[in-house]
Amino acid sequence: MSYGNEIVDEDAADLQFPKEFENAETLLISEVHMLLSHRKAQNESKEEEQEFSEVFHKTYTYTERFRKFKNKETIASIRSLLTQKKLHKFELASLANLCPETPEEAKALIPSLEGRF
Image (tube, rainbow, N blue to C red):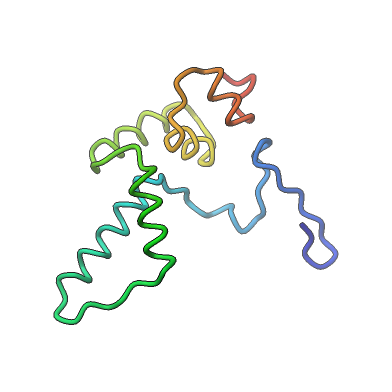
C-alpha cells in the first residue's frame, strides 16, 4: 500500500502493520460482543429506542456466533495469561479469538509465532 511517495509494507505474518495501528489496541471478538451487548441494553432501556444500523446487527450476530468467552472474568484471565507470554497484541488477539488446540495449529494460523515458542 502506498501513501504519497512513501511505500509501506504490510504483512501480518511478519507483524508489519501501518503506522496508524501502532497505538491501536486489539479487541477479542468476545470483548466486541460485550461492548455491543452493553450498547444494545442501553438502547433498550431508553424510552425511545433508536434503530441500529445493518452493520451493527451483522457485527452483533457475527460476534455472538464466534465469541469464545462469555464473561468478563474469563476474558480478563485469558488476556492476563497471554500477556505473560510476551506476545505482540495482534498475536494475543489472534490466539484468543482462534483458540488453536496445538502449538502446530497456532503456528500455522499465526506465522509470526514460528521459531519463538
